[in-house]
Image 1 (tube, rainbow over the protein chains, first blue to last red):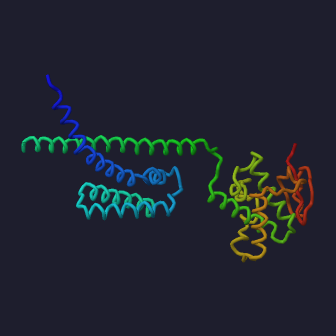
Image 2: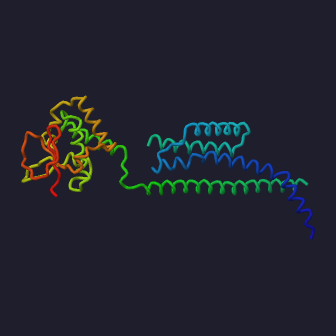
Image 3: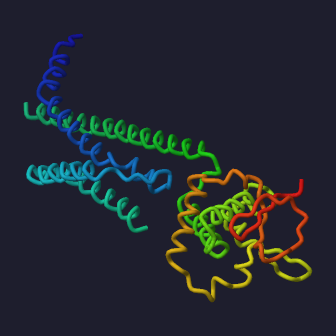
Length: 102
Length: 191
């Protein structure tokens, strides 16, 4: 049995597609991580285990960065990132509202 | 050739989905792990705190009760006289024979032969309801209360003092007399 064509196909696949796929996926995962950055602290506040809110400069930079990524996704018409960042914003805003107005 | 390309594109799409799902699961696990670790650490820290830790509201309430007691009992007394009243209040809290809170001691009432008697007479007499507060003296009382409550300022001679009365009354107590400060005579407990 000749495995050479299969090996060649895998190699071509990795060369032509994998780099793009993984870069795209890593970017998306980074966006999720940015969105989750404040979640542990906000949950700690909501459960009454801590009264320390995340510092305003960190929140500011993080949200500014996410907004940039959101506009980038809009420009590129990247629906996955648009939805991810949009949902992330909504969840964060809901948590913040619960903390501030509860 | 076209079929092969479609096949490869399908593979690429599947791989992309697979990689994203795997990455999403990894990221989600990491976020959950970090969050639970943080919450557990905070919970352990909170549980390790002694149960006697009081919050600021409680301390402020104690300060308010002690200030009122000093003011209505010893507003016209010298500094030592005010400290002495505050010290008796706190000695009672620590004694185990009286309520174990400052406000509890200040507002303590006893029923003797169907008559309600306050440990500090001003509260039962209602002096605080009919007399206006003299602000400078009230502020002075508050300062004394802060010193005694938060800075543990004490008069060494009154370490065991639990009772006192004004020098113009004679209740006939059979208690060991400690000292007279201003117009108040202080007593310890029966040994």
